Length: 125
Image (cartoon, rainbow, N blue to C red; front, side, top):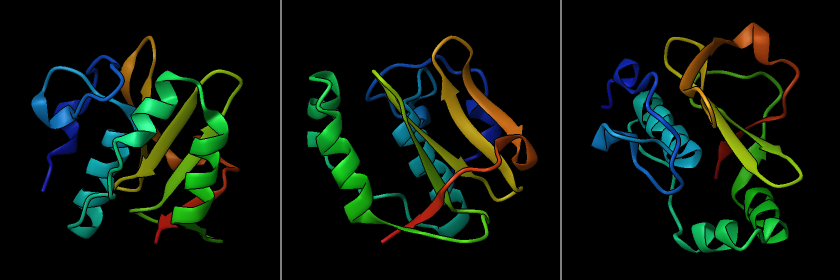
């Protein structure tokens, strides 16, 4: 199981696994948080990174809808997806009940869940 607290402050880099200890990507961070909660990381499809590098956000949005199910009440192991104009961000609720994400300037951050409401939380299929 990943020790999430050691990820705090790692700088952002697309495609970087926080387990390497040098940088973090929001999807791979969310995957590690889910793994800490459930024992299983999120499934990874590297074509998502190709789509992100090409700003093919429609493909990313469709993949999110296809691979997740919305939940009414957020709990550890849930993930959220924040679409924006030129970026997509993934967040995940850790086993301690806080929200983990990667901020482009600040790196990996942790926030109390109450500061991240309302979001559409989902679980992976």
